Image (cartoon, rainbow over all chains, first blue to last red; front, side, top):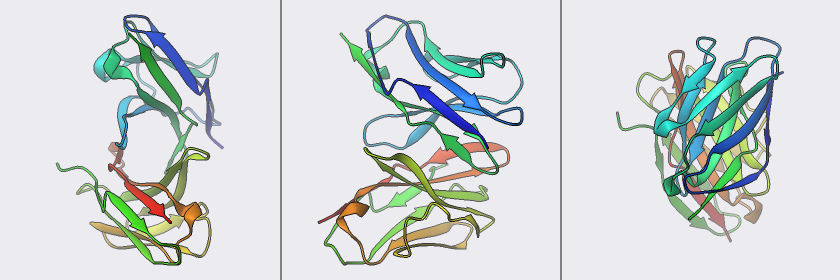
Length: 111
Length: 112
């Protein structure tokens, strides 16, 4: 069965600093991986997805993620954090007809 | 496209009352999912449908919960009778083979 583990339920960075949110996956088949973002009082929105094409995936708002099979990882990064990036971020892997989500990482941006 | 539409956005009800949450998926999407989100348990998949047929309802917590999808453009999640521990944000999401999962803005349910 597919699963994802997000390392760190809460990450805090300064404005302008690098953002790194960690996600490791477990999958018995080549995985389809996703990052979603949830702003307060909203549903989840797709940031980016990996579907076995390029290993470095670029998403919206300058986020990107790199698929590393050897490390079973799909970490999310952004070079320079902005105050508007404060939100909860979810990593997900596609299982049989459904997505399996991680527990989420809350990102706080310090001015 | 208007996206996934959920109603109501907020629902406050008393324990023991029936609650019905509604969802209109994105046109052309053939899979529909109901999730529940709480601080304690995070995001939980309750049930999902494929082509209006329930595929997996193993996440439905109790018999008090039921979901229907009478047609491709409408689904309901019903709780009867409701209890305070059902208080949560309930999300509906839809997808298709060629489109990733899209979420609605959720219904915040408070049961007093």
